[in-house]
Image (cartoon, rainbow, N blue to C red; front, side, top):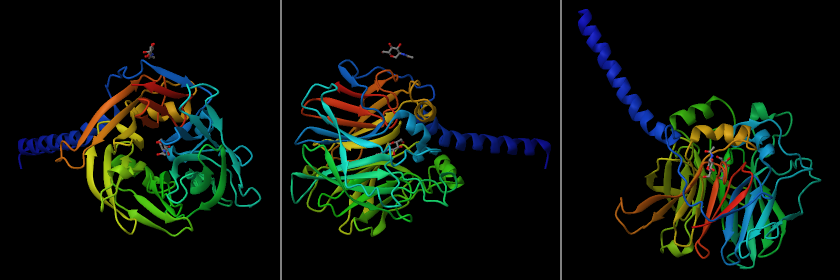
Length: 407
Ligand SMILES: *[C@@H]1O[C@H](CO)[C@@H](O)[C@H](O)[C@H]1NC(C)=O
Ligand SMILES: CC(=O)N[C@H]1CO[C@H](CO)[C@@H](O)[C@@H]1O
């Protein structure tokens, strides 16, 4: 073989690899937000509340206008946030994370929210490890409408001799019961299953208090498989369904790393179709549309490509999905997990309107409705739309304030 031919061959291989790389890297560069210009959008009429910090997820109980959230402090998230491998120091049982309730019928102020008092925590149980809270769902009971079931992800530290660094968090789901308007939550039970509740991120609860779905955001609690998964966007554990007595199974597998999950509102349910949406996180920027089966498993029915990295999802009465998005994913880790007090982490919110009857293409309309360079809110992870008051509520797992914007 002549040198020339070898040269051509190599050039060919080079060209092909560049081609393959750019197919793979192109969307990745877009999702990372390299070169993206951060706009100012939807930020003209906003109020902020600095008293409520580091609230990972918000759920609006629409009939009462009460906005429930699971909160911590920005600094403690830098020490313990297993989703992003911060595994140094969890909050101790003596200083648990908590919940807050904002009364959205009042103007946002120090007087418009209450912190929740927790009753019945099993603090005498030697295996009780306090509360390190993230994903949340608050569901009106289908049996007694005044009762609300609260499902929340608790990133417990492992029990010795296991250690956070070698074994990761021993995460579980805590269930509380409350009534509409009350600022007391009563602990009902802890559900754990290390095989199926591995790296829980978000939760969707059953209205009769009988069970819940959780998304797993990584394939493993620690180790190299986690890193590889993020790079390839390929593997993942998917979503688990558990009864409250702890019988768990995978409801859907094979979906890459998931973050927020949400269930479509009852008005959007047809006789034999109940839809769930899941947000692929980090570089896996897709919205997954799933159909619930009678055995509580889920079947993938559609995927919607997004050009932004996404986080937690919420849904309005019309069935539109709202998602906190990261215009600059590569700012995110530092901004969020290392210096949330000082770092400006650009944040945006996208709305995905879904018309189940339309043909693909018209079925999903994706639009950006909010964006800030991080001054108004830094590192948003949760956005909730109140269509009655035309208000967008935004918070973040390590953000320094809550924000409410009239759109
Ligand atoms: C961010 O935006 C605000 C308001 O639009 C502006 O006053 C500020 O200078 C910007 N900051 C940075 C660091 O870009
Ligand atoms: C409820 C939920 O999905 N929480 C996730 C939101 O995003 C942050 C950042 O990725 C995760 O840490 C949360 O677990």
